[in-house]
Length: 408
Ligand code: CS2
Ligand code: MG
Image 1 (cartoon, rainbow, N blue to C red):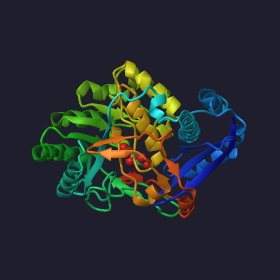
Image 2: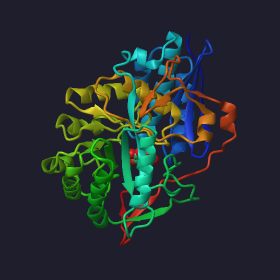
Image 3: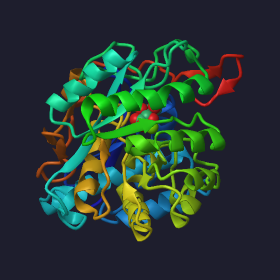
Image 4: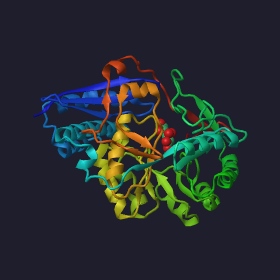
């Protein structure tokens, strides 16, 4: 048995996705997610122009060797493009291996460690009323955890708040089809710092203490601002404060840790374990946020989460709509199997996307389950995919009120 063909499928059912299709000489198909929001074609080219020909003829069962071959063999390593490409190959090979075994992937990762995967939804609103409406809606669907993002008085459209207006299920899509350059948003950390603690106080007053609340700082605060924010929200018992400060400055989290016991989550823009080394070994975070799609796949993610487990750190795998249903399924198989599971992000994909990606994972009262189909449990409908042409889209660029470029 060997790999017979390797192809890249680019489709855009409402937003862009890049998918790798690997077919063995016995006709078994494996799928891998290679989507990198705003830079999709870079990964598509890395795969089709540089990797595909290297894979044809290789033994599809040698997953670890293929991973090392693509990581060490490239010489130029790490980074979001390289690791998304490797992730897609890795996911496809695990999909094939589990299909050959006639088992859902989680069985090959040690079997189920829990009955279901607790997920959190994105609740947002331009003002408190809209936010409360969204939280109520998600609670009615059975969610036990919600991420809270809201507008800041005086600022326009900001990160994480649906432009589509309040609602339980909205297609919040951060990447904008804005022609040849990104849209721009404005930001002011001081107004944000002064506004948000009161929002959490009102949420606790209205919804009580049981609901798990998460919040995404989205890389925007300086270390001392993050320390202040984490301390100010401590009374509201957040499940986690995410990306409170740009995580690549790992040592900065020592300052935040000194001032607060608010749990911290970091890593969705990270691509290898080396990005986490200080954060994990010094216990500066509580949750690992990487996506399987951006961190070298299932092989690398399992190693990263096992490393984190030694330090009492749990998973919080990234699951926005710009991770495809294939990448989401890969996360769910890992979530079900590992011991140090924390929580899984779940932004439901739109109907158009689900016509292209035939999923078998199920949602039930706040929990997802990957299902028991052999493999990852997601099949891409190539005919449906061909109906949605790629359209360039950019994540916004953020500027402070004085025009200075800032983390978005
Ligand atoms: C966000 C993401 O889900 C999250 O935690 O940080 O939605 C992020 O903004 C997007 O993945 C960027 O493409
Ligand atoms: Mg985030």
